[in-house]
Image (cartoon, rainbow, N blue to C red):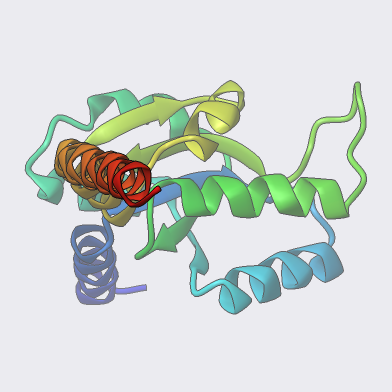
Length: 182
């Protein structure tokens, strides 16, 4: 591979890293071809992309992000593939968890592909033990929905109190009018 081809590959990877709000670095090197194809199909069905890169290309592309990504060096050992997601940062973690369940990984058996590291909205997570933490990360849309709900809550309480007070007042007036009629 010529120097120009390598630079073009790094530029392509840099563009992908910058256009995706989250990506995961995983190791699928010990998986069979059939299992890797099954994993890629699951990624495609959920709108994600999985591609294998050399660690040096990943490192050079990470340097273009404009954030301190030196912690990711721990994840750049051995074979590495990058799982890209446009969705929330939790989507790839949920995909990995679901893939593990479909493969019936039990206790004592290390699930494949192995999560080596993740980059979610400028936060870095290193190690397979971070998978459960990553599945609980809320996306931008979820956070906006919660914020809108919180902002609407006081207004709904005031309206509810006014409406319930009105109903009580109408009930009292009706009772009084019935007493006068009788």
